[in-house]
Image 1 (cartoon, rainbow, N blue to C red):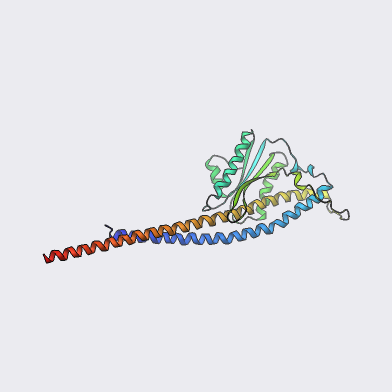
Image 2: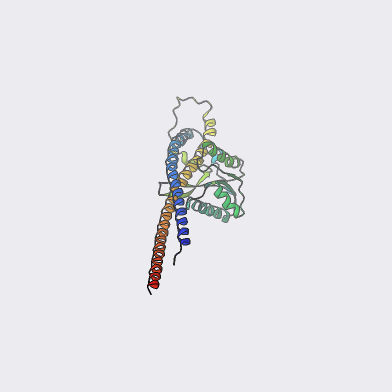
Length: 292
């Protein structure tokens, strides 16, 4: 038989679950608004990268672009892997999926006899690899939610400064590609060396243009900026994917909390009915005893 103590306990549990549902619902709405902002930042950054790419293509027609140190292909002995994760949790399988791609990349490179250096963006990636005894060369925190171009420049500088003197021979960028609010794909991109094929097929810039500095000097300046733009693209795509995963996770949590609250309400109502039935039985029994 249910007592008053059990009913009070059920009431507290229902209030607790309903409070949780309010929190998860608020987090779902915040994540939804941030998805829109992140998508806007992706669209805003795209023309900059496209213009740099087009200018490099035009300059590359009349210059030996393959001679640039960031395009130099050599025997691979040491590899850097840049992994984009989140600083916060409650984002479903977002971090787990991108870390699977990072782990697969590391295994493939180490199976080929190469040394792997880690560069980690986000607290979740740092915690994951720290637990497994892998210390990163460099880590960044507080970046994943709203990455800035300055963050991308710092990350790009960290790997290009080691690639140019041949301290590392290849750089992978592991991030989550935002397809839509329902589809995000963890992927990897070979950041360095930059492929010369990316600049093929351009139209030579008219000789009427005078360049100051020279075309070769412009290439030396623009190709590193092109690498920075690719890093920035990966950061922005990852940020949008993180918010999309968090929105779905919080919606599922809200729905589950509502289901739990409904089940507890049914149990409490049944307990109340049992208590009332018991009290009525006691009253009837007492009345009959008095009549006897």
